[in-house]
Amino acid sequence: DTRTGAGAGNDTGDHAGDHVGNDGGQRRWRAAMMNNYGTPQLTLVRGEGAHVWDADGNRYLDLLSGIAVNALGHGHPAVVAAVTDQLGRLGHVSNFFVAEPTLELAETLLDLAGLHGEAKVLFCNSGAEAVEAAFKIARRTGRPKVVAAEGGFHGRTMGALALTGQPAKRAPFEPLTPGVVHVPYGDADALESVVDGETAAVVLEPVQGENGVLVPPDGYLQRAREITSRHGALLVLDEVQTGIGRTGTWFAFQHAGIVPDVITLAKGIGGGLPLGVCVGVGRAGELLEPGQHGTTFGGNPVCCAAGLAVLRTIRDEGLLDHVSRLGKEIANGVEELGHPLVAGVRGVGLLLGVMLRHPVSAAVAAHARKAGYLLNNVQPDALRLAPPLVLTEADVHQFLADLPAVLDAALPSSSSEATS
Ligand code: PMP
Image 1 (tube, rainbow, N blue to C red):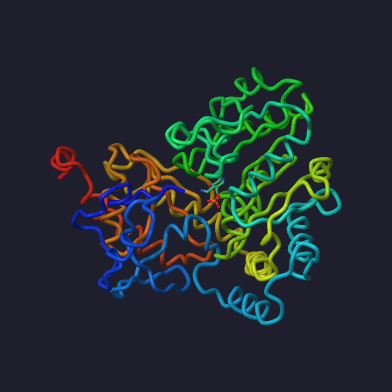
Image 2: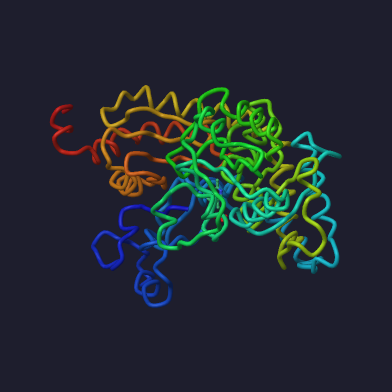
């Protein structure tokens, strides 16, 4: 993920304005932690529902939720109870064995995807790992080529990075895993021109989250499905960011009415615990043979118990409809502000990008923080909102009421003169 708030990406970390709490957090951070994320903006100490508190006691509405992770917000009683109970009962077993919550989560996921009896689940610990598993499944087809999209993001491990279509993230680590071809995102004709009988898989995000919440044109995923099927290639949909209710359906592919061959999940499913999933549909669920892949913590019963609590709560509390409704309310509300800095809003459900007319997203994020909101400047000219699915109507109204002043404060001076 990109953590690029004001101050992030600063290699010295010594400029005024950064704030890691009044407990010397920044000094301790500089002394003890690798600077792979840039200077942290805050030291957070507590969360409840859609809110978090920093080390100074300031409260923030978390419109980022750990970057699309805390689907049920912070400290949700169902997750806390499930995790506590499972940790007290059985905290871990090796993959020589299997635990009850692990089996139950696999079954529940397949039920929700409408794939029970047709697909198989592999558990791991993160989005990148889920993508690595998908990549290995693709290799097991015996075909050399994998097609992915420019601008796409699939993780930071070497295989996932090879699929990631963002040159700046790839360049420092070349040579990467060979065989990957990138094509423009959202362009089905580009897929048509490269997918052939040598193609093992096409790997796509249903919405490109890290690339500024880029939604492909209608019909794109359907065409990708048709092209891959015709050539006997796997369609891998990376739903690490879009899955588990974030777009108002359990999986984003359900909007398109298609079924992929491989689905990768992480982020939202673990309710804040590290949990990744690779789902293989049909033959894709059979390609890995015993001994060919694995990870010590994959299927950890505590993480799986958290995952079950997340899925059951989303289902029992009707959160999918809530997500669709609030997503539209935020998108319409931001557009109706008619603010000169806002070029438009894009996204689906509670994965939204606010497009700016100037590359001042870091300033907007910094002013938002001062006003009590955490959001992400995912691109210089785009903000990302990925709030907990349990965000309330009242939270949305307050945010929409406070947003104009936040945007005003970040307007480049020439434009603010023009509008004042
Ligand atoms: N795939 C997608 C679509 C993602 O958005 C991300 C994380 N932003 C990843 C993979 C990597 O997940 P993780 O950070 O858990 O490795």
